[in-house]
Length: 425
Image 1: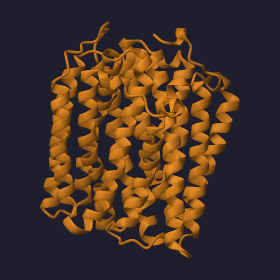
Image 2 (image 1 turned 180 degrees about the vertical axis):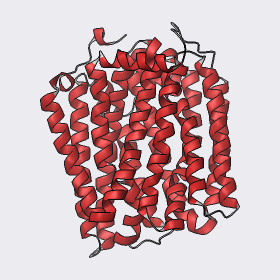
Image 3 (image 1 turned 120 degrees about the horizontal axis):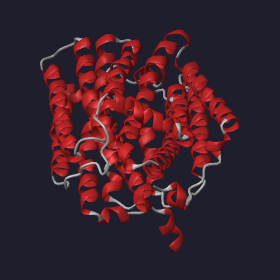
Image 4 (image 1 turned 60 degrees about the vertical axis):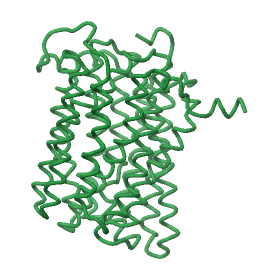
């Protein structure tokens, strides 16, 4: 039994009331958020019948994410982080309400939908680096890996429930109800952040302008391990994230309805299922000292899983149900690997950085984590129009494996990175 307890997730951070309130609010909010994540690409594809437009949402999300993610990190290193969370959460509520309004009005204007999406990503870009930057202020350093794993487990659990519920409800209720649920659930997070104590920056420096952002990049450039933690994730996401193709794959390869349905829901839920299983069994994460090696291996597994997914998609028209199960299993393996990679990378980032720059580095982290998949949306959507979905997905997975092997050989300092007492600020 002691061995099993050591394998299960470490719940020590939940003893902290501030973290516990945020974590519990996430359980409610993340389901609603995932309904919107499901509804936006499904609505775009239903309105246009073109994966290129679905991929275009990556560009509309990426530009504000870069601008406001980087600037939001600078804001988080200057202003009270509690106040920033309050303001940006209200902004997310408003934009989610705008999603509901356009759908309820029966709009089929794809540019309006993309415009609202871009506005939402601006608020998200400020909110997320601030949210993560507060963790070292409310938790001791040794609890950060466990806290990050708990956060990811909740996020991915919502990513299971959201797609399954959304995929089934879209044909029945339409998109407006999904957006409305997201709007209402965001009030749980607003309540949790309102109860946080004041969180001013300990050693505030300068002003939150362009110079502050540049100083954050300068700090990053002097720490190659931190820099490579971003580079390897970009390799994994840009080449290996095929989510923009899920509407087309669900419809053409697995026979689902064009507007969504069970097949689309299964594909979207598979990665989160793997991530949740990885999170539940994440007790080992806090005991890993060679975190650079662990990141590289996790990303390699991700690439192999995506290569296999491409093969499954190509073979699917013959036996759709069986190959849908294979696709689900491969996506779940990829999700578990991605969860481990993200937990290790963010632990490295939070523990090895000074508090004065944590907001800015988290801004870069959010830009990379959320921006990489958005670049992938555009890239996969474009490539698939020429070579098809199966070749696009399999080729991307192979590119990830080749890329991470090259990184391991060319930048051994990251592969050899090991947690020591001196690495914790």
